[in-house]
Image 1: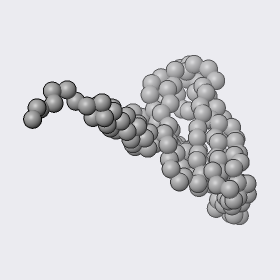
Image 2: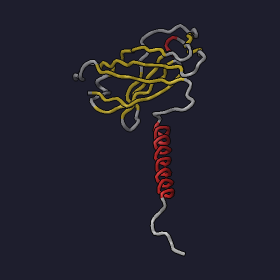
Image 3: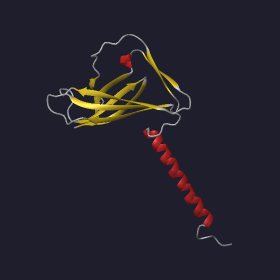
Image 4: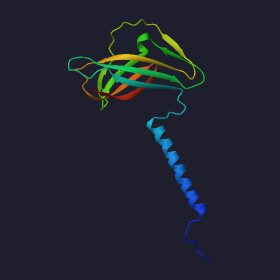
Length: 160
């Protein structure tokens, strides 16, 4: 009886297939863990920021914030907020998650519940202008936290 010195063709194929399956599982786990893929997430909230102009000492820093709320289910959902002012809220932290600035209460809101409807497989987008205080915010890296129609997200932003 002789001992085989080379792996059989079947053994090589099994090894290659094992590595391919491990790589595929690794990629899926990575994207789920980092939050790039959210399985079974009925509603997703995404942010897009654009700074209107570079920061100038003594002048408010103007940032446009586009908010997109997407219904990923087939059926529509009802969106409700306690007041008109509670539909959109934000605050800013530095890279160490220390509070820097939040939304100011310039307008008076009637204490009336507001609601809207978002159809299934549809999205709604709104753009909000934000003015950041130059005494609190300087060019650098920050994290913006947003609540829109009761859904929350956060994103890193760079102020230039």
